[in-house]
Image (cartoon, rainbow, N blue to C red):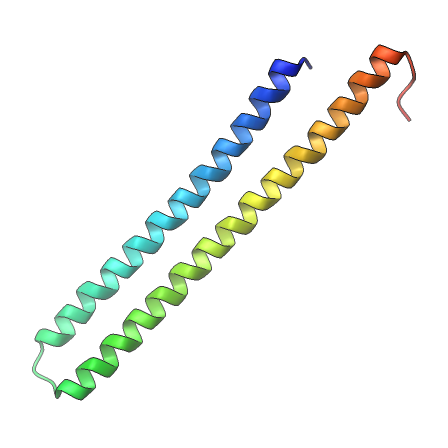
Length: 106
């Protein structure tokens, strides 16, 4: 495996990790948007104002919590992908050095 292939492989992994984070952010935004829409429907319903405010805050709080959990899960996945990429690069580098120096892999 040449340096260009390693670089390309690492770039591919990083692109996938970034894409996962972007998808998580997008899902988080969708969740918050839906929560705001639901809060708007609640506000337009005939209910006492205090109840509506409490319900709205509850819905928004749950939506934010869910969105944050999705983002954190995606960050963890992206971190694992990067860690694995680093390990693979280390192994490939060791292999190349062993090939160049003529030593056998252990």
